[in-house]
Amino acid sequence: MISLIRYFKKFANSFCPVLLCAILLSSWGCLAIYNASLQFPQPEYYALKQSTWLLVGVVVALGLYRVNSEFIFKNIKILYILGILSLLLVMFAGHTHNHMKGWFHTGWFSIQPSEFCKPLFCLFLCWYCHTQFSKEESDLKNYLKYLACAFPFIALVAVQPDFGTTLIYLVVTFAVYWIFGGRIKYLGVSALAMIPAMITILYKYPYVLGRIQGFLNPEAHSAGAGFHLLQLERSIARGGFWGQSLGKGLWSQGYLPLTHNDSIFASFCEAVGFVGGFALILVFIVALYASNKKRRRMQNSLYGNTLFVMVFCLAFQAFIHISVNVQLLPPTGITLPFFSYGGSSLISSFLIVGFCKSVIETDKRERRLLKSKESGEVQPLKENLNSIETALVEKVEIAS
Image (cartoon, rainbow, N blue to C red; front, side, top):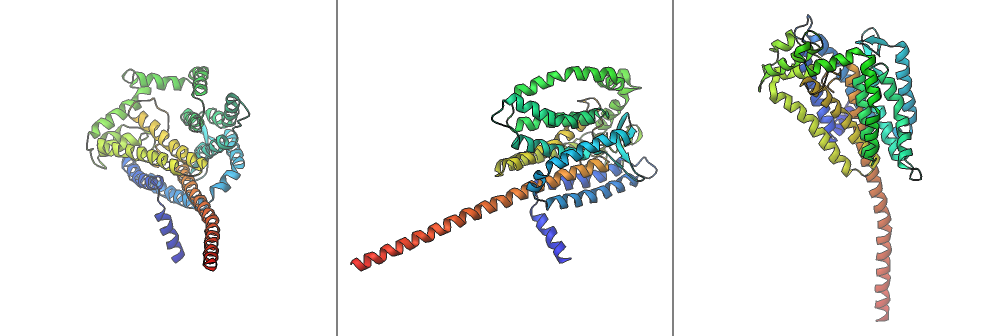
């Protein structure tokens, strides 16, 4: 028991902004889920399940905190293959929900492999850019090989089809390449090359086109694709500056669909107003800023860039979710990290937190080891100088 307390004290003393934000958001999220579920017969049901996933996520983060990042990167190819296999398996044995075949169903919970693959995807891309880019080959050839490695994940998520998560994978792919010094012109050409694919998606999946039409003119599609957007707008508007208080979200509890996951930001804003919504946004901004500042102080560039990419993945997902809720983007089905209901999303987010802590601690250990080596080399040099000085003094004394 004493050793466990010491371990938690050690863990608490090494807090970083990412971990602090995760604990804050997750606790805040459980309360928001309960507030968003008051219209259900058992309002505590989703909040209690989310609390269970929160405990699992904390255990996962604590476990990864103890793993050396060097070990993770040495086995990254195995993790890459396991991620692809999980996405292949869900295509054949998965459950379809809301037009997407992306879940494994058990008796009590569902598993969404694309969520768990996000941190593995970030780790692999960072490792590849750091170790596999060859100076002997052209930048274009390096970039094409990089895209070939990222393509299986992007394609397997897209065919589910989960276009919201596909967008996250695509943006992370481009962001990692740019962070590791890639050329902007290749990213621009890649963006233009995706236009035919986007047109094909709109033609093949009419509901995607319907969402865009509802986004552009929600009033004209108020009985269909625009209904959700109108309720998002009215829920946030009713919250005003200070909010209606928890448990008094009349609009979100009466009209707003998916209040506990896809629409949780709007539901939360009706309760806590602009002040609470802005505070939530600020948490993600601070985490992103702090991770960028931290990576510049880290000795190992692979670890520093991996830290920033992981936090960027969460922040970008939050940006998409909030943008949909405030009608800057059409509906995507993207959850708010640490906040929306969903075990796969929450545990995946804590996986990212665990990896972030792991790279930070591994970098600290490597820095301490380097300092100890340097001090070990300097100490014998000092001893030699002292002995030479002593010998010279003795010779001078003898000569005198």
